[in-house]
Length: 549
Image (cartoon, rainbow, N blue to C red; front, side, top):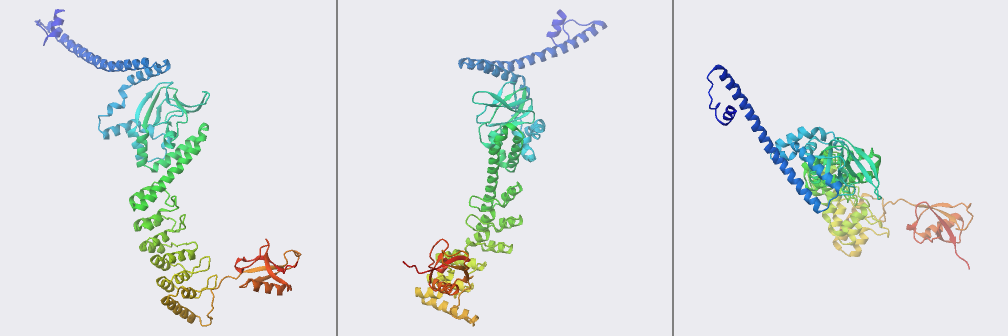
């Protein structure tokens, strides 16, 4: 005993010295054993001290929780769940991701890749997503454990977490108003939950409860949304995957409309990004969005495509890129404007030339009224650009007036000169039989009258066989005239060309139908014709005689 105690407490092998071979061998063996025993005891005592500190923290936390639950009179079921969850976290602390917080991000990312990649890349929600997107998700997830019976999400709650199941089984349960429960689906490894609430911005549709001990990966809504903002092209794929997954589950089919709505919303956001890039001339951003699958023919709320915006702003590189990508050159917005017309309106002559070279057209609806309004506004620059791009200077409005009529009626010498240089005719008459010269005479503008008279003489000299009262050829209308509106339906009528006046029509019809007492015309509805302009081509009319009392 003395030898053992002294050997343990001193350096060397104690105060007793070996004097023979047997004692030397004994001392060597004993001292070696003593060293091993000392190392073992020191190691165990150190482990006990360290474990004791962890246990102490666990007990302190449990004590605080017990005080809280007692003071707030928490029910027994919730108490048991809290105790079980805390105990589970204590026992699994050795894999707590919190221990990685002091490690550099690059190393932490590699650790997360090795731990969680096999789980995340097999989640159906992320099928077809880019490798970069999945890598960012893996970096942001954290690991959690849950005991059987624990409720992770409550039906109707606002969810801000997205979970992925690594191990274990969970169930989605629908709870009716009377409190009855119905299992909707069973969630197994590689499943996800919380995505409907996060992606569609709706309350959690079902309660999610643990069936077996589960190991989950969690990412918060803000981190997930930030990643989607960067890799926005993956957002469309995720919504499509979500729709496919939920369609396969009978209990979730009623959510299809919500998901489809958000797919449309996502496409609208992509279209907005395309238009924004085109408007600001950001070619790099535009290419990125188009590569992500955005439709560059998608229009905004005014019906404008990216080409409309690029053409109006004068971005030649954007315009050329969109043309190469096959965008519709002649798409019209809600106001009837094509990209070429937008370029012309905004004075982008170089863009207009490029579009014309590629085969774009103006496609102006009611070109006559459009040009007449421009002349009335006095916008000579726009008029010049339109005429140089092929707009017909003799287009007419609803009153058969040409832009030259309007210019003459306003006494605008400059506008009239531009129109005449573009080939406008001074011989065309409006619905009242007036030419541009007649309109100029009414204004009394001497210089304008001289200009139009010179143009008139020049135009007549080109066509020497024409008389001074040449009219523009207007398609003739014909009508079918019957005798008496109340006559026998078997009576034959006569087909006549519509003359210049109602009186001529009555006289011709009376002669052809041998009805000398004919004095006026009625429509099938009984309306009296007072102007031949109101007669439609092919209309049936009835010749009536004077009414006798």
